Amino acid sequence: MAARQSGLDSFSLFSSSGDKIPLGFGFLDPSEKPPLLPLPACVEVLPSEVSSSVKYAVEPVDLSGLTLLKGRVSTQEVFQLSNSDLVPGKYEGGLKLWEGSLDLVKSLKSELQDERLSLNGKRVLELGCGHGLPGIWMGLEGAAVVHFQDFNAEVLRCLTIPNVNANCLKKSPSFATDVREWNTDAEFRFFAGDWSEVHQILPHTWTNEKEQNCCSSLDQPVGYDIILMAETVYSVSALPHLYELIKKCLNRPDGVVYMAAKKHYFGVGGGSRRFLSLVEKDVDKMILFSPAIMEACLVAEVADGSSNVREVWKLHFK
Image (cartoon, rainbow, N blue to C red; front, side):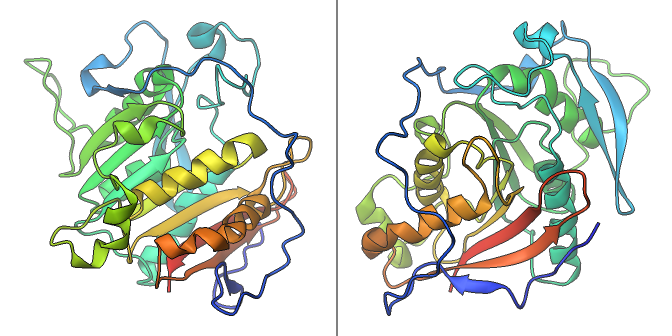
């Protein structure tokens, strides 16, 4: 694995001079429209709703000296799908442990060790969480709030919550009741729904544009301090919804986004650079964030031959 650390690779996504950074992609073509499928209901999934009917096997994952536990469940058993990575609009790949999730944990660990990241008291949201390993790690390392979001409630019930339990549940030979406690003070909550609608049930979001503009005068912080996402930018049609959700959820002016993704997802058009291009095209809307200018820094690049080039980016306000 080859990794290139941040420091040299950074640029302003939104420049007051109006200069554009060529990323090799344009905005969405008018013909690229999301499929017209009914969206699942947005719901909070309680830890007590963990599935007991689906076989869950746990195994360790070594992340450069850090060991986390991750589960394995069958897509056939949960979704009646055989050997499928995803089915747009029905199943978005949450049962598979994607490489970007591991890249993200390693990068977050490095950021914390180098004091570029602080977790004490922070509110964290992991979008498209699947296994939820980045969010789990942040909860173990001192984050006050960790909320997990996935398109499918089944993923949360059958995999994310069991993974949180496997990594964070207090070890005890037996439990006298059904009440179990995690060995961290973090508040873990789980939310299912499409990116276009799930903000309606997330606890820490901006309610309107006026509130966004007046954020500096608010006595209490609004939004999540850290947003995590791994392998979420593969679908071109979903990128605008993802970006709008981030704007509704991210604390200003101190919030940061950590994004792990492949540079390009060949065959589907998405990728980290496509997402950054989309964000840059939002220059005309930046009056909502004024006077903040957002900057993106390349935290790590991974080219280990197991897939096309993968990247971890950090987006934050200057």
